[in-house]
Length: 546
Image (cartoon, rainbow, N blue to C red):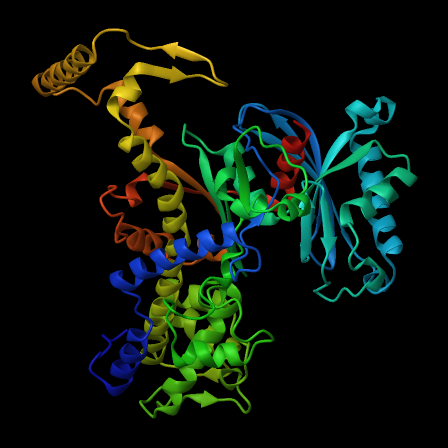
């Protein structure tokens, strides 16, 4: 393959378009600030653009839990029943059975659909957990219900259907508690199953990561970067002010366990900055938005998630082709009649991934893709490189944007709390230690100055010893460093498979200004948490039963 000449009009125009997708350090920091503002508004008030939904999940697992829990995952035309056996060592065993929803049930009655779901739960329990039929009610299997349709959640196992999507249209289910509808049908069959929790798959991702994550870092965030994007995180109950702002609010949100002082919040961050105060807005983004069923909504998701990246690329390639810079204009190139290049929503995000990762001789893989995906045969290496330049810019921008909510949440929660602790008068830290309730325990009754003097000189002595011996890091220093790590569980095809996604995401995290609170990126641990809608749902059923 001959070297590509980057001075040609085609290469120059491709780089010009790619430049429009730049999202620089200043923009990253402005967006992080705006995200924190929208978080506060959503936590304090109902009806905000970023809804910050309380999930009623008030604890997260730590990997030591044991037991058997069920999950029912209804996400579309297919569903599955799972059982998760927790072994107590951050390991689990998963059994599952998948089924299709008969089309007539998707537009029938609530009783018809939920009785079908209950029957499949019954079949699964009889096959895998028949011993539970002999046990009393206290030992019934707890089930987490992942219900991927809009609901108004009013309790850990109570949520009222707002509307159907994905081809469902069961009118008599609107406004009803979906957990109760399922429990009624389960009880009719005499099954030893209790619907313990209504589950959002993002919360499930957080729970799955929390149970399986290695090390001592506690999982703070569960995030999905796939077909769509969303995140959930652990927030202090005191900060979710809309739950207690008025008597009416307290009644509306109902009862929840407040003993932990925390609750997982579903951010619905796909709708971050719908007004485009800080998000980038190119002609290609605007063309995409105008061609969606919800223009002006989910503007963050439309710049980040896999559902939209392919269409953004297609819009950019149309401009490049129509600019007469020479895309697909070389001798031997054939553009089929009515090509996919000019048909909306014909390019999948996997196209961007494959083109950017292509190491084949003469870009043969990409050239074949252009024939099947764009209806363009005979594309040359320069054509492929022009497409790669733009695809890389779109993917990089997606990853850099994805860093915004992660950084904002870490700053608002972990770093803010550390700042508050650091501001506490030292004399208060040394005088007493509170260990639950109002019980006070003396830590050190020596004069304050003596305590500080001894502590400082102990540190100096240890540092001198380390330097002299050129020793490895001290054990407690390693543990302290681990204690400062912030763990994030992620799931989704974009974060898992898009070339360089995590590299670009971390690049943006390194640029975040913490206003004197130290570097953020080195403290963040990111790990894949698979099956939030299955394993995560079962773990939420566990937490709900505690």
